[in-house]
Image 1 (cartoon, one colour):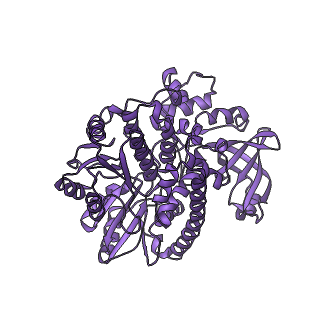
Image 2: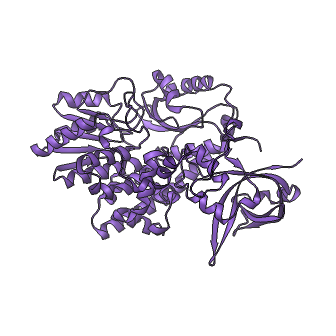
Image 3: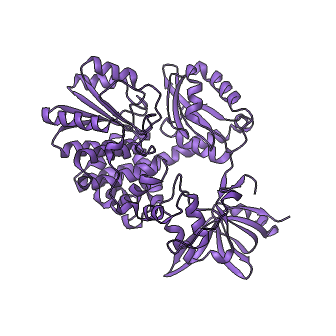
Length: 552
């Protein structure tokens, strides 16, 4: 079971008293999530039923609120400057609708991923200034837009930044910088996504009761942007899942995907809603996604939702094409500590997803570049646990035109003739880096503990995501029997796990080619996820394969 490590250490092996009727196994899982008394358990389980935290705890929120209310009294023209990903369009929809609810004259602008790239750009802000906007509010961007904000200031136009990306020590000079990652933020949580910050601003302006309809948009963005599902983010996602039908556009998108709101959990937000919102900007105009989320017309929403559904199918095809081209260059990947590849005709809106698949396959950071015109390459990257991709780009910023992002996901623009230098310096910086440990398991369990009661208790830990991953359990000394392929093309495996008189079904997706090997080595230690399976009115506990170590 190479590349496996346990999430906790010997010092954590203490007695946990049963709280909330949980078994000792689940109590240990709760303790690792910081839940070790009745108060923390109450917030973990029921935080979504409590009021959101005071939005004025965020830095400069009072200044942003005051400036917007001044604009309201003056009947100023306001523009919300958004971003083209799921977080950006959800943020744009939240704040645009909020300002319209206040009776303000508001428009929004979402830059083209392909023509303009991430964040503010001078050409766009010049057009907005010429169009008569007197106040520009950024959502999910702006924290590094020093040049653009200075230009707007020279034109007498005020700017409010709402963002969540990593801050530098110096901040842009503007009316307010509402960003939880500010170094001087010692009062609020620090891990909101862009839409989470937009939601907090809306609550400051309208009050939480009138902002309930925005919570599902913030929930989608929280999951899509891979921010930690802890603290208030967890509460936002739990509440948002119950309120999906509050947004006509989300309902239409879910229907177009062939799903039902009541069936969706956090995986539905991640794999059904978010990819379709992202597809709008990856393959065309992201403003279509914002129009969908702001739509008040059922027919319009249905048409836009179907359009995004079709775009998502196109995105999958393009993603697979690029991925296969990357795999054909495995010699370039094999010995380098970081995967850096460039392609002639790769879609800049898709390369980030492909980079993520390469990270999953090779266990090391990946950054893909595509031609952007004027001798520039546009890149998108993903990282592994323990490698701060944003920090790496910051160290190499002298050979980049621009960059931005997070520890785990970032983008950059570079002059084509400097790509070799970038690859060399990045490789030297990460020299000796071992492939990331792919699987982290929480605890050892006995097979008899893997029952419907444990399934139900694990589900009470949901929603799962970054910072609150679905538990992986290790079961030692198993025997596999009844091993067979399943699925139309035999690409999956099914087996029965037996230990100490207990037996349970195991499903291994995309492992069909391993059937003969499993039959040769039926005794093993397993890493699994435990879930309830419902089939023809009967519920049963089922194991989902993660990894195995054969007994010697």
